[in-house]
Image (cartoon, rainbow, N blue to C red; front, side):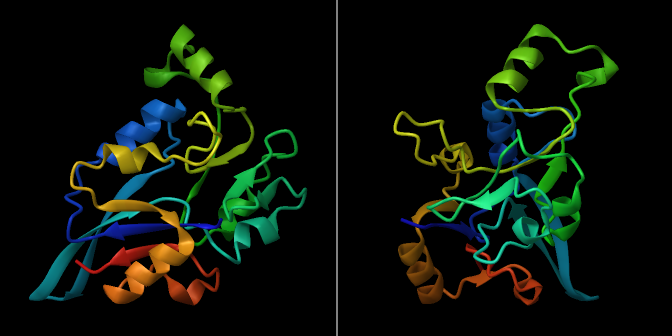
Length: 199
């Protein structure tokens, strides 16, 4: 089964609960945020509105990051989720430049928070979650967090307004079509499978 993601911009209040839950569950280092929330302004003054847009990996059908990777470390699994093989990643950051959504991050585990050395928690978290210094990281939809090894995004569980839906791509696409959902940056040519319902 291929997966899709739907975010209802009317429901999202920009609380960053998704970002905090993601960071805690995945033990990401300083500067690495797999899920973030952007605040954008649309329109022309005086007719403007603010849009809160949660950003994560866009589950692209034609991921430019995979095409750009010189070692094959970035790949698409059988369920349509783009992943990174940390043993093959050389940290060249070519994939980061190729991703139009800014969904990838370079991992440096040299310093802990506030410029201190890594504490015991950070060392354990980075090891347990595959944070390899000198490689690139991205959202993997929490593969391996569930007992059956299927993706189980903590950001969906943490969303207090239930603005996030993750599941079967066909069902997500049908719901998006029914409710006027659109992908972000369709001109990028990556065919993303994260849909946004209008605010």
